[in-house]
Length: 253
Ligand code: PGA
Image (cartoon, rainbow, N blue to C red; front, side, top):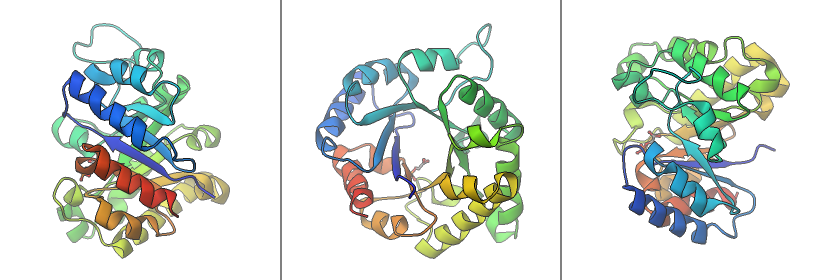
């Protein structure tokens, strides 16, 4: 059985002191969570301090992006070695906001995925269609290009270390959530894309999160779907109570 993974993507929210406080609250709340993997992704600025707070607990650290070069003259960027040194385990790659506002492409996603895996860290690879793409009949071709692009030259063994976050762009931060059926149908399709690349056993083991307005009141329905193995949570991850309610919904399954 695939282990649920609930990850909080804090985006550009919380100062360092606010991040430390939220991390402390989350650590308290989830201390008895056993089955569900819990991950938080603060800003780069807060990540090292948050790492100290969650050390030795059942909360794991992610960051929200990384550069694909090792080091050098890349003002504003962070390398995988820097992320690794502070003890992060996951790196969110290819978030739709990165794609939309910061020129992330399927090619740069692929470079970042390979760099992350080479460092022994685990990518959470974000994919998803816009409303215009869905309504224009391009859902499947967009997802196919994103999946094939992200996994180009990635071995099956490495693919198993990755997580996919399917996030319909029209559901992110809008309060409009995909229905359980829409999410399930699409995630099943995403798993079929993984199967085409790596075969049934990798596709059956790889975890696919849903993201986009997942909240305490819709989490149980989404998490009950066969091909939904967790959530990448934005807004509802910014308060310990609502984040915990989603974790509890996963743990109860
Ligand atoms: P949301 O964000 O939960 O606020 O919709 C999800 C995400 O972008 O990861």
